[in-house]
Length: 284
Ligand SMILES: [Zn+2]
Image (cartoon, rainbow, N blue to C red; front, side):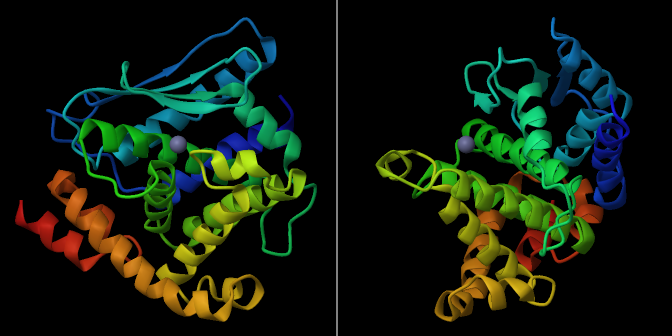
C-alpha cells in the first residue's frame, strides 16, 4: 500500500468525521439495522486494500451516517472482490449493497494526477465517487425496503438521493464530493461519447448525470457552486435549478422524512437541511 493510497482511505474517514453526525445510539437500532462486512479475497492487492478500509472504519462510518434512516429490516453494506468487475449494486433478494474492491482500484487508476480546475484533488477523485456510489446503491435499498413510489427512472432518483445525502453533509464535504463525482461523470463521457446503448440504458448517459448533479448542487447552494453556473450551465437551466431543488427537497421530505429517526435532529442542523423535513422530524 503506497502512501497516497493510505492517504485516500484515511481521507474518507476524515471527511466523515468532519461532517457526519454522531452515531445514533438508542439501543434498539444502532448496529442491528445496517450490518457491514469487509470480505477477504484471494487477491493480495484487495486484501491490502481491505485491511486499510477496515483500519479506517470506512463502512462503520457509512453505517453510522445511514442510521438516520429507519429501515424495516436489516441492510448489509459489503466490500467484496468481484472477479475483475469494477462495479457496485444493490441485491434486493439479499437486502445487500456490494461495492467491489475493483471499483476503488479503477477510481485510483483514473484519478487525475493533479488538482483539476474545479478543485478536485487526486484523493478526492477517489473519495467522492466512493461515497456517492455507496449512497446511490443505498438509495435503491431504501426505495425497495420502504416501497417508495418512483415516477421516472429509478436510476435518476437514486442519483438525486445520493446528491441530497452528500449536499447535507456540510459545505466542505459537499463541495469536495460533488465536484469529484461530477468530474467522474465528465471523464466517463470523454472516454466514451454516448451512443444508442447509453440512451437505451436504465442509467442516464454520464454527461446527463453530470449536468443533473451540477444543477442540483447549484440549486442547493448558489454561492458554494456559483462556478457551475458560469462554467457549465445554460443560463435558462441554471435559473430553474433552485426550483428543481425545492421540488426535490419536498419530495424527499414527504417520502423519506417520516422514516428518519428523531435522533437525526443533530444531522439536519449540519448545513442546509430542509424545513419540511425538520418539521416532520421534530414531530416524532
Ligand atoms: Zn443504480
